Image 1 (cartoon, rainbow, N blue to C red):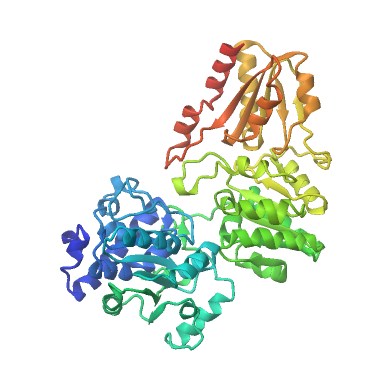
Image 2: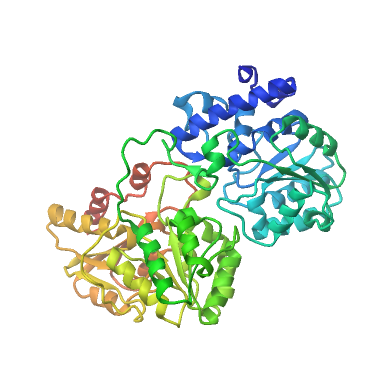
Length: 582
């Protein structure tokens, strides 16, 4: 095997073209086996193998700095930069993160997991190099799907006018996670169809010296062009046409489904998976029903339809009542705000981790204008995810913007009632934190009037201790209540707040009469979160308050059990704290 003699980028430089072609095949076998075992990004990594080999053959990393956008495509890079054991040894499959990580290797420059960042980062890297009088190439590798992001466009605009070495490689496989959206992609198609010779060229208009490689999975062609642009003293852009999922037929044919896969996806499925209703399927059906009833209802998402179950059939059924803006969450918020202002009923679905990009738009374009959109926030909560995809920060981020109403349903019936209210009210922007737990159904219609803002639900009346369980952690609140009764003989009060953007002053005031302690449980960061609102309310009283949630930190693939223990989020730890406090 060629791979046996490749441990560093220097080893790649010693290979013949035939050996590099063989190496590409060996790397693909490793990636397919590992990703099918662990889950992760399949298509993007398979499509960039030859380009990665060519990069390390021509350039001199880490003196020449390669910056990966979103780093969905960094597995080949990791294999060639001293981390191949993470792909050859199943016992070490989880040693290395799925994204670039400077703590792992000197060949990684940034921790990256969000998209459209590489060109902006490369601009800073190039400028620092020149300020310090150093030498070396600065290379940004960005996929065509990432080009729709605002930061990518800002970065390209600045990089194109830079007076020095900066090389941008556009990996064009005619796909984002799903299909691309936006006028820019018409120009990419034109460039592909004309072998890069079309007079209308977006990249040239920004000031780049432009090169096109039609055979982006041909290592010889790539080496030739990379040698040509190496050490350029001006901005250069190399546009390479690749095949997403290259080398795995099912991934080539099903590019969207194989962008990211679950463990065992390639294994033979002996029995059909039984359908189990969850909040994702519930939302999908709700939107399908509402778009049939009302032509002004429109679903909006920003380049990640699979997260929400918005598959091809769903998108096709909705037709003009569906918009994918591409990877452009900022635009999605402003677009939804304008839709609502003009009488439409947008439902914008977004992952918690990605809503972080939209703070200014939420504040200015949306909330300042009080546009009545419905924003569904998915996957919110403490998780064992990579540091780049944590979803613990949405409550502080969203709940402290004026005019925003942020709701936390605890069961199916509440969720549907909140959706109906949000979709039909016209006063405020409403965000709903889609429960990130197994579906709970009470079997009873929720008739709550959510137009009475910040009205908490008193689920069970007790004394001495009040438990406020927010959204995902309402069930934990129930467990704590039962455990308090068992261990301390106290019949605690249980409260479902529903709202995370304000407090029920009347209810909280009444608790002072016969309660000594209030505890809050929230599935997210405590700093700036819901619990602090309760603590602040009781700040000038004798009421004691304990807040439970996540610390302000970036965790990286830490198990939920460990995190819950660290944050004292087990019923045993919470009741222990209650006993000490009382």
